[in-house]
Image 1 (cartoon, rainbow, N blue to C red):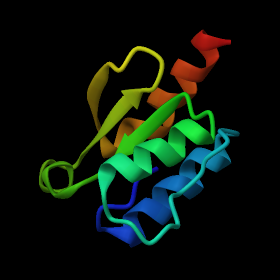
Image 2 (cartoon, helix red, strand yellow):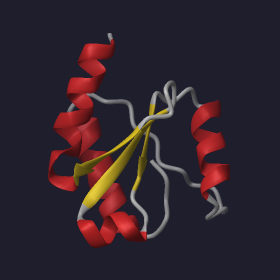
Image 3 (cartoon, rainbow, N blue to C red):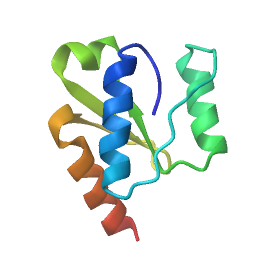
Image 4 (cartoon, rainbow, N blue to C red):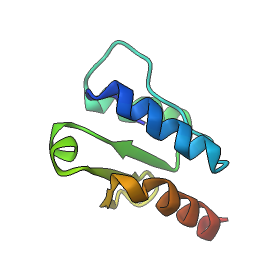
Length: 92
């Protein structure tokens, strides 16, 4: 998960994902630059990255980026845990 503000919400969302059995990492580096955070995620072999920047926060959505295809979709924040669990199940 990238950290672009709203740290409390990110930590809460990470907890929901972990509760569903999804391995979840939260960027803890000092860089607020998205490119560095995406590189970190790639180095961690993340399949999906969650983006929750100011635009997403304003719309109560999370952008889910598939690190294999590069495809991005927006998912309502309340549905992210279920959405990713379904993606993980279908990717297995």
